[in-house]
Length: 466
Ligand SMILES: Nc1ncnc2c1ncn2[C@@H]1O[C@H](COP(=O)(O)OP(=O)(O)OP(=O)(O)O)[C@@H](O)[C@H]1O
Ligand SMILES: C[C@@](O)(CCO)CC(=O)[O-]
Image (cartoon, rainbow, N blue to C red):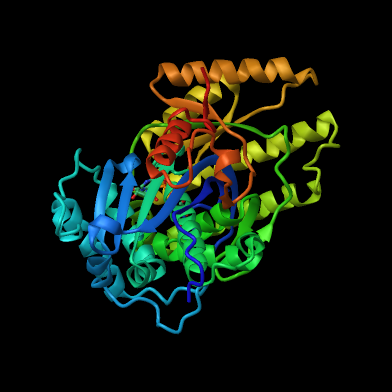
């Protein structure tokens, strides 16, 4: 029961992307991945108000990154896609298992919407989109419809509400840095928070920062990833939810790793070659099924690389190796680099390499002696290059010179190199007044949307190397 109306009101959440240091693809087949959060985030705001003139419970959706703007979706049409949670389910409850039937229903609905927005829009509005949505909008919408169907639609209908949902990201989309998990996680967090607030407005704020709440966010985000990715391992949504560095193996409790050493500096390069994680995961699975005695040992070797990273990182302790002397740092980096190069070749051998990745490796190797490997699903997307430690311990200027030379070479070849911090927090909720200047009063969704858009288009958290 909602004792006091708490709207109009805004919930603003964000969740980070990730870089996989080792174990992508192998992790889908129960090997260990080592992954770390990246300081590029997806932001989701949900503003709820009475539906007033619209006449029925509605979701107004704005996802400019996939050019889906100002869709007015009918809650009744979304509810018809499938049953929601049982009516006696607690406000903060786990998702049900994903079934083929659910997948098909939400997939079909999002495809139908992209072809004909009227299929899900309010009957009373002109459903045309002002620009043509990008093809990526279909998968984004599949995950979105699934999450809102289960977490929000019933409450909006019961209470006669309109929810304005807006999504913006500073991540490159579909490029290996976990944009889909960060989208699914930030969205799950904001929806779950609203669901709890609408059912139990007195819920203490500390619940939304608890490990138990994050665990729920992670579970819902994984369900959305199942719709976007097909067969995700769960590593991306885990890192997006909890942040930091983690050793992750399906079916086992993830192990938190010490922070990465500050001397471990990566140039992250977007090859700008688009690819689909879903298709690449299917390709590795099909190669494994066809040649189990060939591809299986490659995945075992990748497990060996992840084990070697755990051995390298675990002794660093909570200071992240701040007390290592220069020879120890050089030895650490040399091992780290060799494993990256081997890993990249292994990933190419199972079918997820690309000429653009080899080209980045050549440039970063010849101009800066950097080791390079793909990160995420591969097939293009983003790659990471490790900046080596100079032989003499006069590091700062020499490291800067290497970063400069490599980035210039990469940019001249048409790639987009950038630097970003690694290991930051997972899901965050914001206080609008403090955290998003210009967001305006809480009852103005338009000011909020513009402030989020401005923050993201400035790439506040993404520093492209000039
Ligand atoms: N900001 C966003 N707005 C809407 N949809 C998004 C956004 N970010 C990601 N998506 C959805 O996620 C999909 C990208 O998922 P995909 O798994 O292919 O790439 P990725 O997550 O960036 O890479 P990887 O899984 O290799 O780390 C997009 O096609 C889109 O459907
Ligand atoms: C390719 C993959 O291993 C990582 C994608 O970021 C897929 C997954 O783990 O779900």
